[in-house]
Image 1: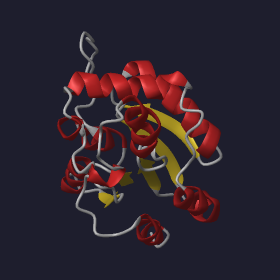
Image 2 (image 1 turned 180 degrees about the vertical axis):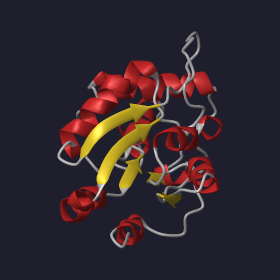
Image 3 (image 1 turned 60 degrees about the horizontal axis):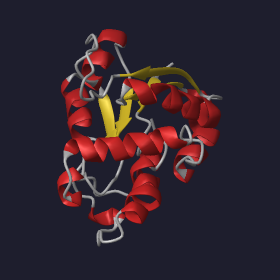
Image 4 (image 1 turned 45 degrees about the vertical axis):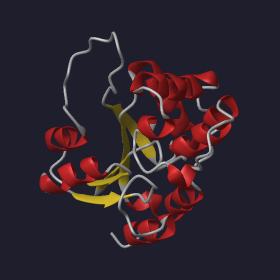
Length: 192
């Protein structure tokens, strides 16, 4: 059975949009950007703050309510309900260690019927010293699977997976070059 490897943030949920609209904009009322203006990921330079300030704000949002208020992307939920049982699924995300349990809980709460395995590659934070097992998502895929499909919003992850011989889909977001919409992407996945 084919395994589909899912990024969590901005693929299964709308973390960046939710954080930007519910946390960043209220705390920074002078900001004149919209979510669609966030064409860089991470968007700290667009927000005119340091990377550490951006990450601190994002992490605080993740931890404030353990991500419980985040809804799944509607198209993702519909796809899983229709096609989820045809594949094996794992979550593979890059989050800081302090946020991994909140992310895992969110995945199990919303997609646990299908996603039975949660893996993460620690997104480094200042002052952390963690062992490195996998350099990136493609490295993880190579060490665990002979065949798998990756769905991610970061072009570098999709490119690295493809270079490693894996099929990969780029989830459309303002910061990547996908010319599809989310429904089209899930439509392609339904034809795997």
